[in-house]
Length: 75
Image (cartoon, rainbow, N blue to C red):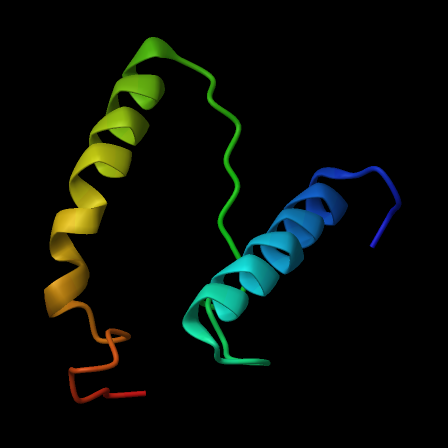
């Protein structure tokens, strides 16, 4: 990972947030994030519109997601 890159910034953010969440939950070393992340260059208004919709609607799908801890996984 290159220092001062987007990947490095995201990794640092995840580490800091994970520490704070685990302190609040009193759950040291517990996993908080799904592996990896998806980055995308927004090249048009159409793409921006689609991504905004995805960001607004995606949390509503979490209860049905395969990776939700209460759901059986096919992985």
